[in-house]
Image (cartoon, rainbow, N blue to C red; front, side, top):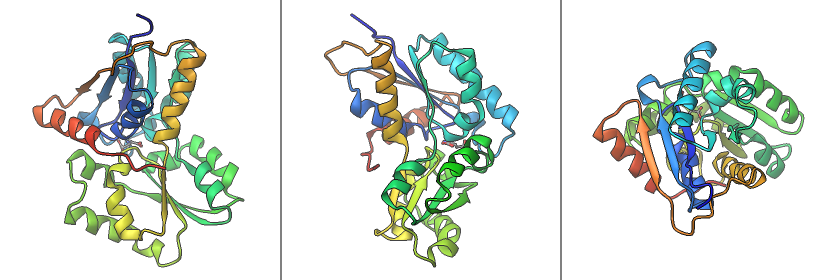
Length: 261
Ligand code: DGL
């Protein structure tokens, strides 16, 4: 029995399950603890200090439950707190997520690329640095999406209200040709099908879930912390909104097939 302690995965709500499913798919024999802070969500419209405080608190909860490593499966929490967390836990395999601009730009150099994310992610220095690396290589348009994560938190992945929200949000942008959309919030991959319907199938859609999962695997291997179990591991859900309905939504979202690039 080696390294059977769980990998801790954290998000402001249920969105990080889009990263969890990538983790489970590439490391099925690991055990997972998923913590969603839905009673405090959304984080993306809160102050930096508040998001940092909540993120540290939730990471500490996962470590208290025995997590051997942490995935901050939330772009907003990563941009607000990952640097502080790295200072606090220098030995811990800790991976955050950032909008997948790099793969979008390498596939569409010179293209018109829209980054959908929370207002906070787009305001942070971490994001400005990321933009700085790619803004000469493509036309990157930042699109804050306040209100979008709430549809996913309600389990509304394909309703008419969501279609109306996305149509209003995107219509001005898609009047001109868009090559790619980057989903810079972990909730948005659950609205991917609806986004594709609104913008058209010819627009490529990127999210950072798979890259983040691969990075966690690499970090665990490097630290010699990969589990040696030969059976499928377990996933335990915790949520600050502790209801039966919430648990069902988490299970449902995990069971949905990923279509990320
Ligand atoms: N899922 C989160 C992200 O990746 C944020 C949603 C929110 O709490 O505003 O940014």
